[in-house]
Amino acid sequence: MPNTNKPSGLTPVKFLGGADWDGKVNLYYVAANDPNALYPGDPVTLSGNGDPVRGIPGATIGVAGATICGVVVAIGVNPDGGPYINPNNLGLTSAPATKTQPYYIAVVDDPNVIFEIQEVGTGTQLTSADIGNNANFVAGAPATGAVYSGYQLNNVGAGTSSTLNLKLLGLTRKYDNGAFNAFGAYAKWLCLINNHAFRAGITGV
Image (cartoon, rainbow, N blue to C red; front, side, top):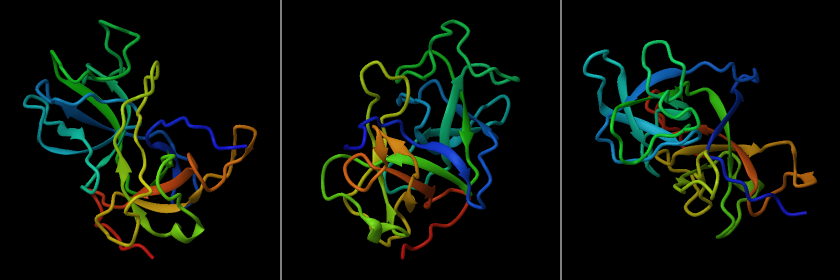
């Protein structure tokens, strides 16, 4: 059976050494005039500014082929101890493109965390020969009714360049749509953030 088409951005899975991801995050500030919507699973990069009162570092949406500092896992408006919610709308788990206030995001920014990401269903699909190479993500809006990222792995332009966003580590070993996750459209890949703000990019092999 074909892999399920269910993009959800980047999902933290485990550490490079094999330990399970422990849920640790750091807090980042998103300015009220930031023009980008943000969802759990979105990659972000340092914005070059920060919270003018608390000194929390600023972040904004990540761009293909550019340096990334981590991945959003929760979004809220309370910077002083959380929780990561919007008290004015408890059902809102994202930050809108047009904001009326700053937002604060929990970001997995450890460069040793391995993430899962879905490959796009177009283009020439990646194979085992691409393990160890690098690739960019491709931006995407959430699916209708979804409240998480629509970002996916781009199979166009994968190669050895150290400036590509992600380091490909192989397929996730799990069942998907009643069959084992397999190479092809919508394959679920494991990756590191390669072009990381806190670690220099590494050439693919």
